[in-house]
Length: 505
Image (tube, rainbow, N blue to C red):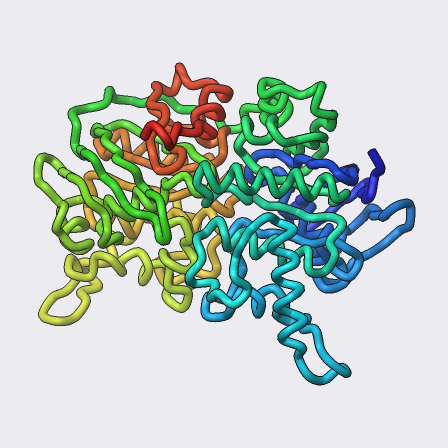
């Protein structure tokens, strides 16, 4: 098949890190070109370069033999490159036609919007995609699968010859996935090149024609479909590096402390974000919850913590039912959530290290309506020492700390509430490998002190890095429950891409 785009020697350096290094990537016309790799492998950076969001530090891009460069998304679109993002990027209060032509209206004499022509063109595009969607329908009234079709129509409206699809099935039902695959087949027959990104391996094997695997910002492998299998993808994607030394527990796990039965949370629109989860966690044990984006891990944590009002089911902490209790009551009972986004949800940027540490525990330090420094200072110093937070002191600005030490402050803030169960959502997000090791050592210390530690991750190395037990989530359900020593990378990846028989469910 014709190579419609060729990226050669692509390198992209950001301050302090190299996201891509010397990557080659060929895109074939009339084919599904699969781009795969773990989180952080460089897929997003490469696609951002291809659509003009980023410029490569080194390397060249050519289309049909002619060198090109893209200064913006509009520039890339003008050369025939479109993208369908994982999260639909539509205006719900506007019609299908208005969304398709937003920012690129068809006009008469260059001044007046030709609404009739736009509507006819929208109907033509939707017909090409074999969808009988009324162009005048408000996007808010469409199902999520139909919204995904409108996103594709937006890209085709600019005569895209190359269409990037980033996790397009993550929010689709099984029937909607089948419709999307039919659309992809039609696009292939029309000569459109599809760059397809997904973690669902069975899906990739089914529709992929050419496979490119990235690992740690480098090209790990490239092969046509006939040379590819799921074990091949897994071996090329993961490698065998073990960069996080694991420390065994100092004490055996204790009794059950957090018991969850039939916990469910409806997804906005349709389907379930958390689907009938029943699980038990023990004191002194570290449990990793591994899963891909959209698996339901964060929604599970937020439901346990009382942040999701629509959640149903039973949550018992030390035998006490928490189902109807507020976040404040759950915190007092000993359940604490450390959020994924520490900058937005975990820290106050204009407070000091000590101010952030004590924020959730002000009642412990309050004496007659004012904060007692005599009560607060020794406890803050104790936490700083316990977690090995590298800081000039409790009065230092939180912004003076590294990402890893900021994460320790968020954990320390939680410890001052004297929790029994600690939920950590992606605790190593945005920190380097040395800081990850320190955070994981802190988690081991806390488990050895009798806390139940539960953390989420989408990184396989981090799944093994500290966990005693590994749960896998997919489509809101727990698909595997393994002791860490029994959990192979292949077993975890397979469980994370498991597709349920929705007809039988």
